[in-house]
Amino acid sequence: QVQLVESGGGLVQAGGSLRLSCAASGSIFGIISMGWYRQAPGKQRELVALIITSGGSTNYADSVKGRFTISRDNAKNTVYLQMNSLKPEDTGVYYCGFDLVVRGGPRYRYWGQGTQVTVSS
Image 1 (cartoon, helix red, strand yellow):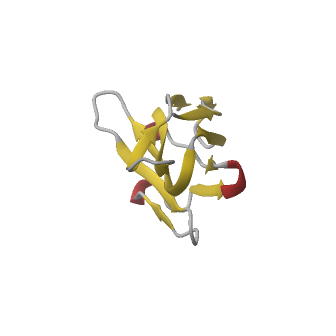
Image 2: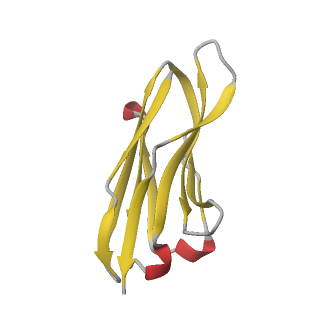
């Protein structure tokens, strides 16, 4: 069984910063990628940032390029999202999603519980 636990959301004024963390635990054989996704009210969940565990290549949504930075600590099975210059349109529930392989099982995407980020204007 795998668990992803997020932390770091909250309320911030426009222009402010927040840092999200997500740590995975359980019978993990290997993690292929770690990502952050968000869902605004009435909208579909969208990819915000993704990092490939091996090599560290990253991918960002156009709307967050230059403002958000994704990083990881492979030894701790943890991913971070540093969010700077936040805008009201960044408001939403942020989920971490790990593509990983459990011991004796297939590759699968696991999700965190979600953390609310609210940016006031």
